[in-house]
Image 1 (cartoon, rainbow, N blue to C red):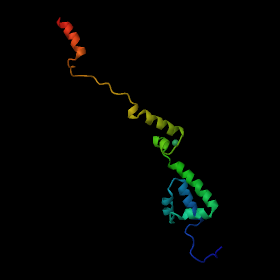
Image 2 (image 1 turned 180 degrees about the horizontal axis):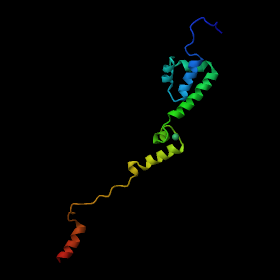
Image 3 (image 1 turned 180 degrees about the vertical axis):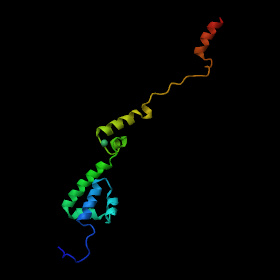
Image 4 (image 1 turned 120 degrees about the horizontal axis):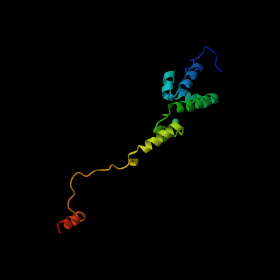
Length: 129
Ligand SMILES: [Zn+2]
């Protein structure tokens, strides 16, 4: 290891790593969390490639963050995020039942008088004779 006090101090130290992982677990995206911590977007990924324990922590934090970002109780949560929780399932069912092709066709009442056709002509002829 390097001697203490020599060289450039690491920007992504233990405290910053902890803050970064907390932000990721809270649902913040990697680029935004890295910017907030003052490191480049690829720095955490580079550390994860070298350090297996950090890689495991990062993967767990990413899973947590993904669940937090998920739009529960929406049809999009079911359709786009593949969430099968009861809230998302119900929302997707509601959205499907409200789809325009599922609604019954409107019943129109005719206001104009019907033109004389074969079916209307026969009773008229019967009335004449
Ligand atoms: Zn859900």
